[in-house]
Image (tube, rainbow over all chains, first blue to last red):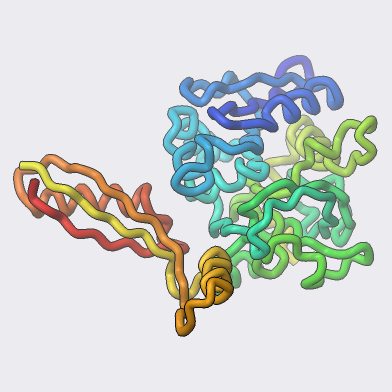
Length: 248
Length: 83
């Protein structure tokens, strides 16, 4: 934190393509500090929040996120996360967090086999996290997705644990906040669009909040995610807010 | 000694395979009858140096477990050939 501003560290892998969007939103829309973190450098530049952005790191070779996980910067990101640091993975960044074992589950090919790029609605399932503190529980956010592999899957035991610990942060829903099969764009298990770790400091989501933050683009719901982080961390509330405290 | 590892990575039986399904439908359209349960997977070859087959096997296992397959959704199998 410098002069009351957060420093967002945006990791740049070869093939990241939402890194500049995330940087732009943090710096120009939310007026915070932002730094690019090159994947080969094991230095997080004192970031308060690490963003793993969307894109196609390493050309999605082998499996989405599988190779990025072995980048030098990821060793630092894992250490940062284990020490309680705030990490958000968006789209490909979510895939990388799963491959790195920082979040449970896996993202399979979309059920339709198609790349889906459109606005979707998300129901906020847990507003007690540092990523969603500016939202109301049950609130519907309009945020776009753009992915071919966003079909969340995990085994029954893990799903039960996610439910019990209130670790499912967002589900795809319709305009009336109903979680329906029709509102599921990719076949995700139980319409899961975003999950958080048990400690509450690492979250991954398929939708792109950075694409719905600049008012000129028509939607600003994505700002709530970044604003939540800014509020929580600057006020030092993040030590109090975790998935734990958000339990129903 | 060097060995050639021939590795197959396949989706676990519990995982739906929409790609396999699409290929299955294409086969039906092609007109070849009585073909079902198409499952897509990956085939990987690599050469591994080691003092013994056991060592080569153990190294291949490690690479499969940590990188080539994601145990949540995939199984792997391999054979080693002395080269």
